[in-house]
Image (cartoon, rainbow, N blue to C red; front, side, top):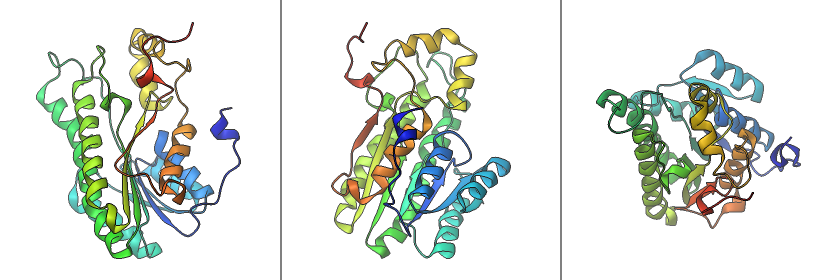
Length: 263
């Protein structure tokens, strides 16, 4: 059991409304559980009915089915959150994909490139655009966009569109963090290292050598667990991070700091 799973849970988010995209599994599900445990009303958004409804039922929130690449559906998501709970205080724009056909630039086709950009980057643009007016009226809010440690460093084991999309998320989060800072709205880019989620497991099951090549570069010697990332989201969502905006918030096990790893 990790420290994040063992730690006593705070109650920093009582009465606040959190919208989480990709809430049906992985980091999104772990975050739904964490934010609910801290007192938040949780809106679980996912394209998958079964997992999304199960997540909402578990955390006592509501489920909204949404294709995050569709502007009208994204607008309806945040309207549902506001209509149900009366505010939108936290937006964790987390939905993303990492398909196997996104590889080297020499082999990745344009359709694979566009699909990843739409889900990983354009969706974050749409979610931020939709939620900001609610937060402006409230004079407060925390937006957390899922980028990645690959947004700040490179790899010879390429996922060209994924890497580019996460770099875009980081740059956009910085821009928004600065633009809306004096309106009481904080925007940060969460940059996780590799996380032991179904998405990662699927990717590495098809290529164990790729997993081994990555694991050797993590100073902590393991992949992250989803509750550890959820703990970082809870911090960024809460007033404990009130002076943090426009940041690249690395939760990467030390990868970005390492030249060589411990023996």
